[in-house]
Length: 301
Image 1 (cartoon, one colour):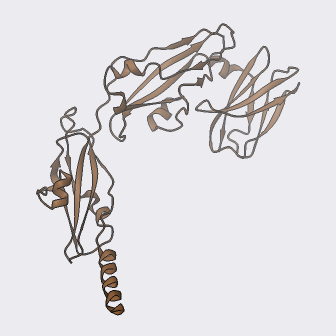
Image 2: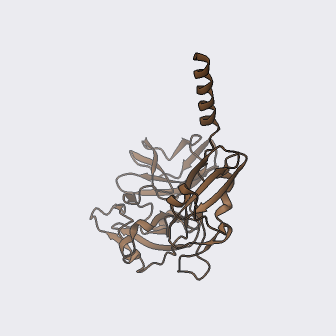
Image 3: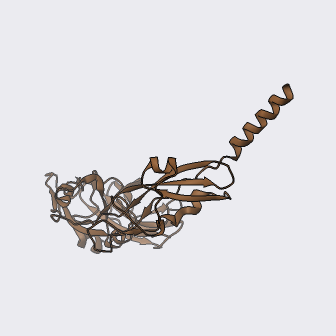
């Protein structure tokens, strides 16, 4: 009797192990290029079928518009290679069916046609009058988002902010905390991207100016005597041309405005910095005392 129970358990366990298991496929995205604005496109739902099959053999995959259809194995889409969405986003249900008596399994994914972003009202410039004349302030770069959205659902779109046109175009080096951004020059141009939350299609680029009280401008960045060598650098840099003062503060920022490190010095016209631990990128150096500020850029290669 014990041997019979053992055989039955082995048979049951074998059936459990042998049951097919559908893999979870990636969502599918199609840009809204055919009649832009209608949010419909033709999808090949079988594009990620290998992910559903997940290396299993003797199986077939069918695609359904409802979970009930997939669970019951009915109302499969007749031509899943050419399916035009009827909602955006739209869930698709896939049924993995064994042809060798090993059951079936259901999984799902979504298809998206990213909405085309259109800026309703261009962003305003931002001016903060702190009254201290130090040419620096903390800006909330997101204050213009409501007017740019113009009443569309804010959860459908996202904004990112940058310190250069090229970074905005390539979507790199985004400002990490746009609600608390300290300007690097005064005035300073901020560049932005406005796009659907599912990225990869249409993007709207924009820009605006931030400014506070004080006299530091772009010309100061170009004309001050601060020098950095070698530039680009990989290990150490020598910063020279520093306005002598009894003491000053040297700060290094990345392009997102994040403070990387701070050095303090006294009455030195040059200072050597170890930059070997920095990731390759462009950085700003700011040297300030009670009366003056000096700026320079360098590249960590």
